[in-house]
Length: 246
Image (cartoon, rainbow, N blue to C red; front, side, top):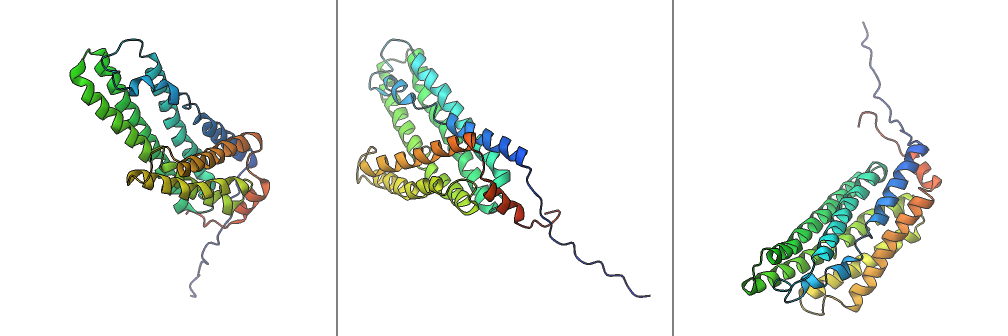
């Protein structure tokens, strides 16, 4: 009796429903816009980072509210990656996983920074006095370095990973990821220069890079909320074969 040979299962294409994609783009867009709620911390954290905060008096509400805003940002950062991963992984799963990992790491550094800064508030509330001034300044320095390596550096790698995915897939207009792809190396250069004392943490290179990265993330959030993914980009992803059961 001749053996029956079953041919290998051909690759199939799993289409992404448009209504599901619209919900995904809307969620990701809102979360991206939510990452900008921490802007007021530039002013709210001013007093707690001052030299004599531990021995001073007055309300701690500003620092506590700033910490709450940053915690929201940390969760929103992670949420953007989780929301976009099921879509962008069809372009390149390795890059998509890298984007999720870096975004989670960025959120973790934000949590660490908030815990560090609020520790200064705890010293003040406990009445540690002048003896804790050196400890307070050490915690401020730790917060500054954590912020530099977290929110000051990781957005560059996010821009490189997600920007490449969106540029190739054409899910959004290419001019948007180009902003991030141009700003990313400038941001990394600015951080490296700060580490080696070539310039202060606030410098022209980093300033330009921050504007480009912020413009990329804000415009992406607005576009995803208002327009959603481009149909041509979705069609390209739907046309890509996916092996059944993979």
